[in-house]
Amino acid sequence: MSSSTVARAMRLLAELGEGERSLEQLAAVLDVHKSTALRLLRPMEEERIVQRDAAHRYRLGPQLFALAGQALEQRGIRTVAAPHLRELNAATGQTVHLAAYEGGEVVYIDKYDSRHPVRMYSRIGLRAALHCAAVAKVLLADLPPSERRGIAEGLEFTPYTAHTLTTPAALLAELDTVAAQGWAQDHAEHESFINCVAAPVRDATGRVVAAASVSVPDMLLPYDQVLALLPRLRATTAAISADCGWTDPTALGREV
Amino acid sequence: MSSSTVARAMRLLAELGEGERSLEQLAAVLDVHKSTALRLLRPMEEERIVQRDAAHRYRLGPQLFALAGQALEQRGIRTVAAPHLRELNAATGQTVHLAAYEGGEVVYIDKYDSRHPVRMYSRIGLRAALHCAAVAKVLLADLPPSERRGIAEGLEFTPYTAHTLTTPAALLAELDTVAAQGWAQDHAEHESFINCVAAPVRDATGRVVAAASVSVPDMLLPYDQVLALLPRLRATTAAISADCGWTDPTALGREV
DNA sequence: ACGACCGTTGCACATAACGCAACGAGGGAC
DNA sequence: GTCCCTCGTTGCGTTATGTGCAACGGTCGT
Image (cartoon, rainbow over all chains, first blue to last red; front, side, top):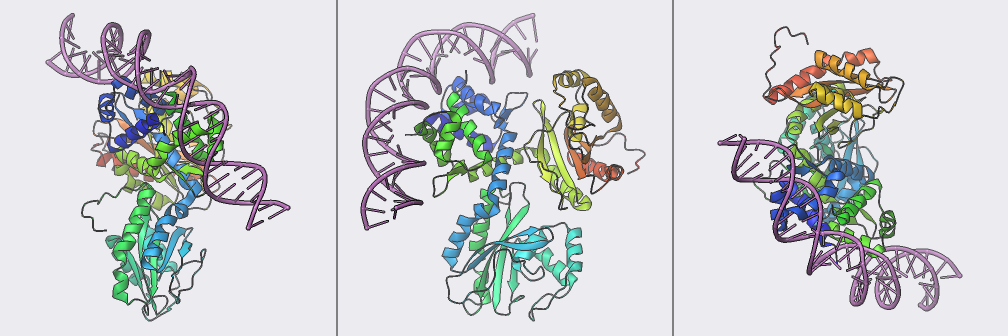
């Protein structure tokens, strides 16, 4: 037993999500009389959840932005991402990380351990190496080019392995690639026996607010099989982004 | 005559914007029986507008983010402006806002945070104070004088700081100045330690459809250095306007 | 200036939302 | 482990409230 009146109101919101509608159009969607639709819309208009322009056409209102912003502030990206990351972790059995760019550094803000006996070492709150970690590459790639440059030139480029990028130029070139393809890899650049792939999470404004990654020791899966996890990873980050309000403009060819 | 049921549902959303709530708490807010609150929440939960965790505590749900994202998407100007605002944000490192005049109020429709540790607080969807905010002045200044007058006389003129304009006459005089010079300032009129500059964005018909601003705490930059950001801001708004089809008729002596 | 269209209002009727009270599940304390 | 207490859930009868209808009025286009 639930309120059908509220259900109708929610249906109106969904419809307005598609674009501006007149009162009559909205009434037609619900298959109710115009006056009924009007009475449903009025309280939402008062709360600025919906809005109407001079021509009396309805659209979603600014209070919606305010609510979404408050919600994200409270919960943070970590809470929103959690169920999706857990599922990715369950599906792949591998270590899953969530990282964010905060004040010049990339920090791990969540982690789901591999179920295999051999695990990689990391801990929530630790900083990622900016010139190695796949999550770092994803996050840096979203920054404006001028800032990327500044960061790249300020790094130490500690050569952890033979694959580690060791010059600002190499890193900047890599970031261009990452920005273009929409994901990043770490091919034994930090630990000689660990490969990672990472993909960005975007919020409603389209900005990259976090990055998720799968890390796997190559004794478990060789490099090319790690790349095969990419579609699954990207499906996960797409789902998280959607939960943050992001609507993918390149939603054409889908291939989960 | 409007649906009080929907009004109650909206009230619940506003309450959930403040934080997680139990069913009983929500019922208490509306002063209704628990079962009533439950019936109101159920359709919203089905649409994922609200969500409940394992402990049955309600919070705002992912569908709300999706709606907010769609709503932002519908504001065409936001999409056009985004890359330019991002660039301005990157170049100055300061907080950048985009605001529009909608139905008698000035609403922030986009925001790019400062990268400095000390940030100003604001959120997309909030209303700007019409007698303080630089963006408000820019948007009001484009209205016909008669409408300006009506708005100015209907305001409350809350004196946030010592610099706040407190009379309709003072505001109207300021709007004349803004209209003449093509930009506006907020010299510690809303927060005593924050200065802003704003400039208009015009569409192909020449109407001001939005305003962009840079806001900076004066511990970061003193007032006169904020004014020095003006050329950069105006270059940005000019670029956005150009993308909207606006061709500047006063494109003669440029001194940016 | 006229007509057509769309949003708005008042009213009578019936639906659906409400409060109540009993049920059930989960958690904490002893 | 068992009891108790709290909180969410359900069924039901009443009545408030949402609904359709039809007439009104404002706005735009011709």
